Amino acid sequence: MNQECKQVFEALKWASSFLEDNNREAHAARLLLQHVLKIEYTQLMLKMQEPLTDEQQQQFKQLVDQHVAGTPVQYLIGQEEFYGRPFEVTPDVLIPRPETEELVYTTLNKMSSLFPSKSLKFADIGTGSGAIAISMKKECPELEVTATDLSEAALEVARRNAVTNEADIRFLQGDLTKPLGDEKFDIILSNPPYIAHDEAKDMEDVVLEHEPHSALFADENGLKLYRELCEQLPHIMNKPGLIGFEIGYQQGEAVENLLKMHFPNGKIEVLKDLFGQNRMVFCEIK
Image 1 (spheres, rainbow, N blue to C red):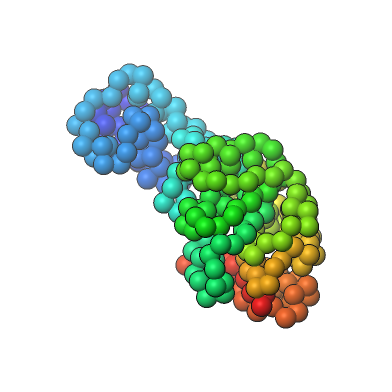
Image 2: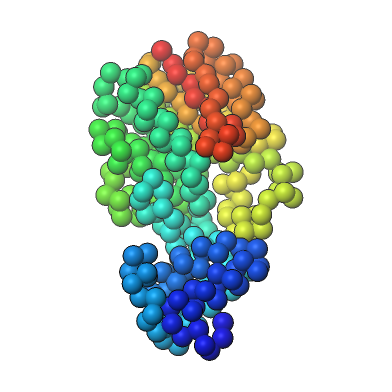
C-alpha cells in the first residue's frame, strides 16, 4: 500500500487489486476496511472521499497482508453473518457457511407440516459457534433449545453469541448426545465434522491452516460421527420426530443407509443445496 492511498476509495481500490493478484476475493477488502473504520457498508459508501489516518492505513494494510497469507477474513474481523444475524467467530469454531443456512431453512419448513404444535424440544449436536441453535430459537421462539459441543472453548463462543443475539439456549459440554442423557427431543440437527482425512490435500489453505481440524475431519472416511449419532438417536427421539444432518456432497447414500438401519420406518430423504450438491439428509419419524 503506497503513501498515495490516503483516501478511503484509494485504499479500497489498492486492496481489491492486491487481493485479486494474490488469488483472494476482492470483496474481502471492503469487509476489512469496514472493520478498521468500525462502520457499516452504507457509511463506507458515504465516506469514499474521506482521508484515512496513518494508523488506519497501517492497520488496514496489516489485515490485508494477513488475509493474503491465508488467515480467513472472518477470523480477522471476528465475525460472520448467519441467517441475517452477526456471530462472533474465533479459531476455536468453524466459520458458519451459507449451506448450513439451508439446513435451518428446510427444518423450519418441515416443522410446520410434521408437528401440530410449535412448543417443541430441539437439540443442536456439535454447535460450534451456536449458529444453528441460535437461529432456530430466533426464528421459532417457542422452541426449547439445547446445544452440545465437545469443546468448552467453542461453547464459550456460542454462549457469547447467544447473549449478543438475545437467545435463551441451554449449552452442555460433552460428546455428541451424551450430555443429554435419557432426555427426549422432537427435533435434532447436527453439522458434525465430516471430511475424510485423505481429502485434506484438496482443501484450500485458508481453511486447512486456520479452521479447527476437530470441527472439520472425521474417521471412517468422514462417516464416524454420523454412525455414532445414528446409534444414539433412537433412544432420545420423540414421535413424531425430525432429524437433520448436513453432509459432504458424496456422503448422501452412506448417511441415508445409516439412518435406515436405525430408523427403518422413518421417511428419509437426501436434499441438494443451492449449488446442486447433496448437502442434507432428513429423517422424519412418525
